[in-house]
Length: 354
Image (cartoon, rainbow, N blue to C red; front, side, top):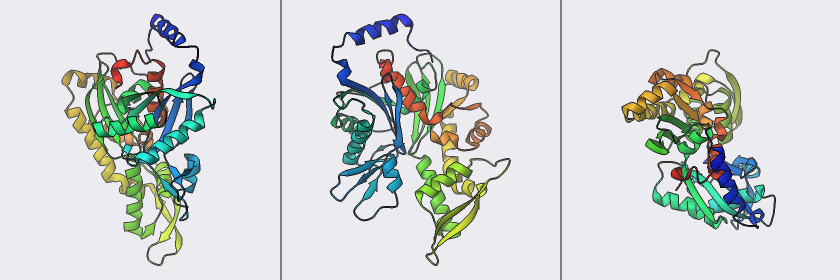
């Protein structure tokens, strides 16, 4: 990525060194607050946390676990403990639990118990409302942040995969997360066109659950659906179709049973949602200015986010649009890496934050 030049970087470092003798008391972090996973980047340390966005609460609504520990409890709790995912469709659905989750995640990464959070950069879906932006900012401030900056997810993803967003060149990003699919055309430090589709990995899981309930009278859980999607799910036919054995509850007689399934089953289950994503990409291309369209023809479409790892999704988009499609290196961390770069170089990336 084209980082700030050496002279400017030295100037920035000098300014930071003059900020105060007590800088060691502060922690600056960047957060990819996702529907499925929350990732945290700490200044000068890199990615220090990658855990599911879920909280386990007791009867007094006090958190007993967050992240991985809470995920292990999900769908296996008793009446004294409940698990909550505070984000839905990329935005905060439960304000108080989201704040508790952010606090719990920050607590996990703080090496110095006495430090406080000074600057926090958080990425948000490009299509959220001002009220939803305010909710994210308030949650971060209540969790202890002194200064909060927001950046749109596709912009963070573009920076994270090494694109120079300041150039007068069009780049198309398709970021498929747990709750939303963000499609954006970026040029000159701004988003020329953006479409936020409230459909992502969670919807694909629901599609799989509903498919097996409808077709096979088999009730499976969210974790099982996720496993099916990751292991044998695909957007287009595979050269060698995959198979696996899954377990669930028979809806006819109520007893547990196993079922042999194939990648064709998973593909059929997810077909409608996947087609919606591909159609959204096509519509975004139709709204792109012609000069930027020429750039996209040369540079291709970049896929980021966990959904970008779905087998043959790049092939399906390529066949539909007749454009080159590239899967970013480590697409799961692209957004948090970009958010971290912004945190490390706030002055350089000032035009992309709010």
